[in-house]
Length: 307
Image (tube, rainbow, N blue to C red; front, side, top):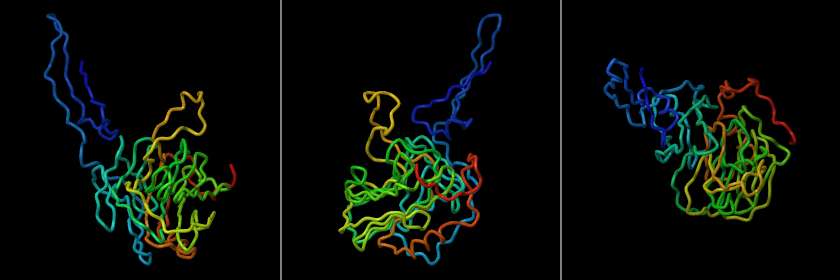
């Protein structure tokens, strides 16, 4: 008989399923007893490069303003490691957590997020902004345990800095310096792409979904970001579940995030008007957008209203 052992401690799923990770040994029953064969040690993780996956056509971004930060997430279309590159600075950002998985995105490939551990982090210094625009595409697999960010640079879930995401019921929101703007009558769909965008400036915080303004609130700037990293897809602080099944004593604090796929998060050092926001929406998506591979519905429907 043959036996194999795999070390699961701090091992990404992509390494766990790779046959090169397994340590193997053959055993044989003889008249004298059990004969142990030589132990063939497996490869230590990580196993790089990871296999490229098919993406959608890459959408050129000509005519759009130059972003302050931008992650194409197209690394999945070629052999890759556990990192994505930020532009235009060229910072190589680690994909933290226990999986590195890419799927077809709105343009090229998108980064899959598991809702628990997966995120992308980039160190950033405190900055004061007179204006700011943040945008990202998301296709949700399920709704989060509590507020979850698409992208943020914040403390206290936006009590300091800015926080673009959604709540536990799928309502998109942005929190800026403790002020939350939420589209309570909009629910982001599951397994379908939606673009969420927030603009800060000109005395207003505005929230957009797929190029349409869905909520706004007065805001007296400027905005100062805290001394924290920019994080994609995951909170940087723990929180409790909004709707626990068990009693409150068992509703434990933990750090959670988005479960689904995220693509082309961008941060602009200016506040976009509604025409420019629509332009960003139209120019950042390829024509042949597909839902998640495991989606049950292949037709992209409008957002559902209400809960």
